[in-house]
Amino acid sequence: SKKIYYFCKFNYMYKLLFILLFIYSCSDDNSLDNQEQDIEPSSSIRGYVLDASDNPIANADVYITYDMPNYENGRPTTSIELALASNSFVRVWVEDECGDLIIELVEQQMEAGYHSMTWNASDTNGKKVLDGTYIVTFTADDFQQQMRLALFSIKGNYEGCDLEQYPAGCVTIATTNSDGYFEFPQDCLSFGYSFTMTDEHGNEIGDYTIPRTLRIFVESEAGNKLTDLFDVDIDNGAEVSIQLDD
Image (cartoon, rainbow, N blue to C red; front, side, top):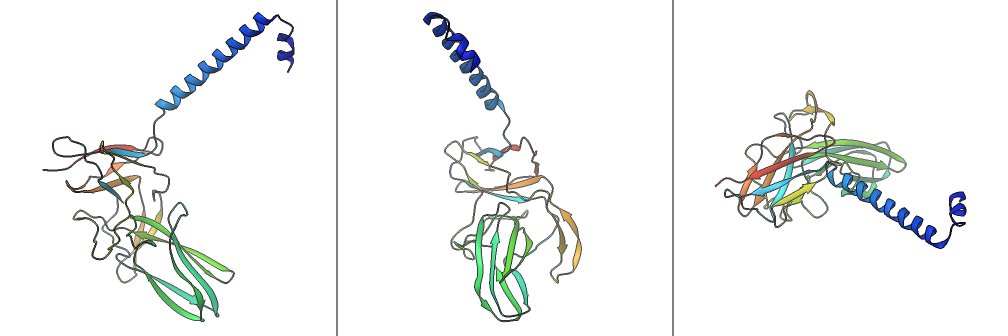
């Protein structure tokens, strides 16, 4: 306020010159800020899908999977066991790593004792969810408990979503535009999550932490492709070019 009062004592021309200089200075600073933002690296996973002749492929569906050992857990169904000490109103639902609701499995009054339910790794619309970890929340009256499920199905011989088993389709993490370009954030991916692996009988076979590496599976009318593993940087993400075979 002191500066404004001081310049008000000058004549009109000086005051106008000061205002113009001030506007020019602010405009110049903003343009510099914008330039810095434009060159700031993206933390997303992004890239192009091309055919064998380097032409872009539009409307290709992009799926992801992680660097996993030879491990299967819960595909196509995952069993969830409950033990109630007394009759209770029970809710069981599944969320992704960002806390978005995937599906509500149970919302009803249940009697005391052991209960079992299954989740077929699909969302409310019947679409198969992406590979990764999911949070299952269980409430019985005022009691609440959470557990994580690790679901992985895309392997070297993956051929795409089984539409007979999942007639509503499969959830994709991205779809290419007319330039063959896709992009998705890494915010809700399962990097760094540690879990105990079990065999088909439920016996523990070791611990594993999901590293910052991915494979991408592309499904399109022009063909399918499962990429090799590539690293995802925590700050810069990753950029990949996926070329379909002849």
